Length: 467
Image 1 (cartoon, rainbow, N blue to C red):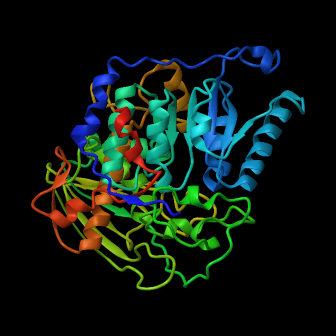
Image 2: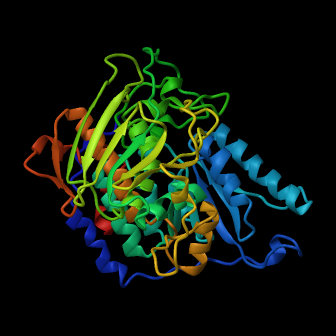
Image 3: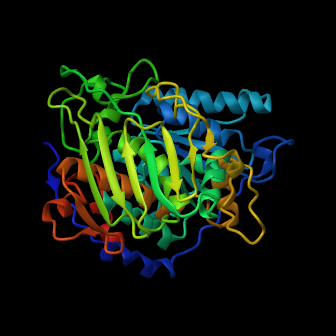
């Protein structure tokens, strides 16, 4: 029997009830393991990490990003694909074997259901590297289970999910970091700090360039591989037939097809846009708010499995009067334009991973006048939060209980600005947005798009009684 669909109607006020038990909630400090478990030369205390999702991003970014820091230890892994789960187990255990000189140094626990991993009281924190449609639910579940959280971007698939995540993480007092790693790269910090300190005069326009994805062909239905729990992979999304290009490659870790299907990802507007909008918000000083007006247009495929947007143009206006323009023809990066000059910042033509689409090569940091980039920030000026290592920043936040460079609210606001752009592209008209109430003014159709139907037993709906 197929699971039924239910409508998700979880208001911001409902989730704010979480704050009522937040003050009374139990503060859970990291658990400690003795150094004897890691050898005489190891540090004495380690944060116990459970990795949820063992695909491309986990393999290449999050697992290595955690393993290299001695204050943490990956003790558990979870994935709905047992082949990828076995590969990750070998990756982690081989690392510790080489580090300690013992083949039996560590035995990592494995799970195929993240809910079982969260029941393990020996796990202090989780890193979530799942597809986009599987971000909000495990983050909320982890917060309710008293775990600290690292989650890949974007924070959510919908505006309702993002608000729920931010409210619950805050109410439960969890250490949190989102995978907006550009916050921990020097050139992005430098650009945002220079803009905030008026080095280009009054900020007027921010231009953001992102890649775009090509459409694909119609794909045949295929038998579900024995190593994949496809029903759980689908989670809260509609029941559909399996085909490999809907999910991820079975024989390698190249770029997966789900990134190009809007049931699981909204496309480059959130996939890479959440990175660049985050930096734009940092420089604009709008990390805890959003635009007032949004309009957009885009080309969407009319056939084929892959249906996320192609070429696009979005314009948003903020309360300060600053206009943000996102367009696929711009150089990949963020260009801040002010009354006295401009600053451009990017990854230097790099990619998120080796299998991401190519982007136009660009300088890491550029300006209308090189003197702008050489300007020193004085002791009485604005100094932005500095992090030199994104995963380490999260681990140190777990230890200190001080916020990491990206909080859940910051992650929600950068993601929500992208989702607003996606809604505008879908509707093709100007929208007026209230960033305090988080609702559209007089637009029933747009307001209905703040959330999505959830397929039971998955989704946020099941947490309502717990909060």
